[in-house]
Length: 363
Ligand code: NAD
Ligand code: IPM
Ligand code: MN
Image (cartoon, rainbow, N blue to C red):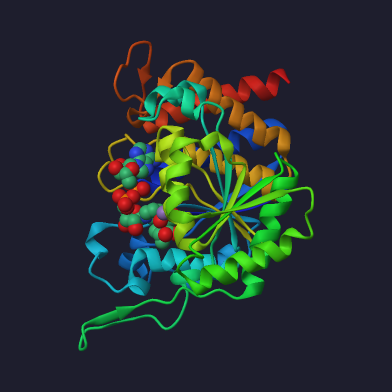
């Protein structure tokens, strides 16, 4: 099959991790006889410097003409004093809006080999398999009015949702739950916020279309605790934009590192794929970044855009096998390093490619 992928690598470790993800995708496509082409465009801080805007029109046009967009990460400390829409992060929100995907799937599962890397006890996290569905186009990120009024010394954002915006993301979450363990947890703050009361009512209404899925509601503060205490109890978790942002970084504690988490945004014109982590300025340019979250994001392109399930699974198995063989990036090798080989970003990427080759050629 033919697939046109736009790569927007962005800032910091973005280019380092997307290089590895693209190399794995190229290898996988070649082995399966598929024709994948990759084009690169600027977004974020690199685009501010080169083009004077965090999201050039040229990048939007190329994204809309692609089958999938793979984004690295955006952001850098030198842009921190800019207003939100002028910052690198503003470019990310603008490309999300332009592509229209409203359901951001953020799977979190514990790799057996990495349980020791988590501050949580192995018996608490082993076997965790949660699919977070984060609403991506609404809530405080996009709600108006929003302003920092420097004269009055006030600032405000608006957490806004319509019933339909909640229903459409809830429907995706229920459909995913139907194919999994048939349990959906909806997370809100309906004890305090009207917008959450609407959220809860809309999710409850959609539940009538899915009688085979067990629905529960949790408040976000309690949920932040439950996913640390008993992560295995959750199957699909659906929540609004800001709560989903926070809970999914927290879920990186379960996988052992934020650098392990992939994501796929579906429901719009073109799917957008990004690892959950940011540009990590503290480790950028040193070969220390963990590219496995970006590589697993590549697997999600194969699953959700290309429909190449066997190839997606081969990438995921390869990541698992590389970990089984004791290969780690530094973030995955905290504490006792006995029996482990600590590799750079490019070295661990090469290990994944070698393993994909073995799996797909032997199959
Ligand atoms: P971050 O995710 O960049 O980093 C948080 C911590 O995790 C850091 O210690 C970092 O070194 C570590 N880390 C993250 N990814 C890693 C990886 N792949 N391998 C190893 N370690 C990794 O979050 P932050 O420091 O709060 O933000 C830095 C910048 O990134 C900010 O400008 C922020 O707005 C931006 N950001 C962008 C995205 C995105 O583009 N999708 C996501 C989150 C944050
Ligand atoms: C993420 C990031 C982004 C978000 C920022 C950089 C705009 O934290 O993808 O999780 O908050 O959505
Ligand atoms: Mn985030």
